[in-house]
Image 1 (cartoon, rainbow, N blue to C red):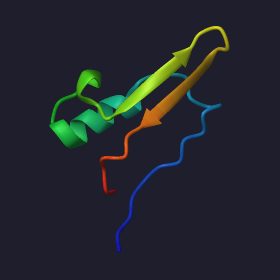
Image 2: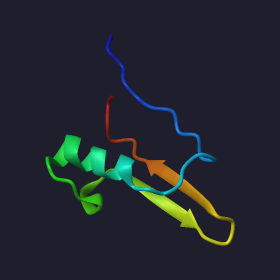
Image 3: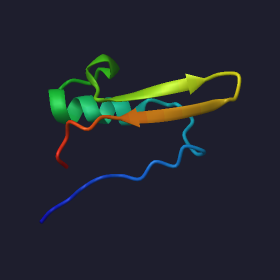
Image 4: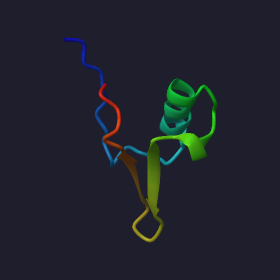
Length: 59
């Protein structure tokens, strides 16, 4: 069984959006955060960025 994935360390996320771009490129063949299955939720007061992944991908 070939499983792929990634571990998200929320405390290291700087909110750059690279994960959104890669996700949209892999799944939609376009570099567009709007098409991504990952969203970055930004809590500005706490200076915290939280990438939220979907459950649609099998891998």
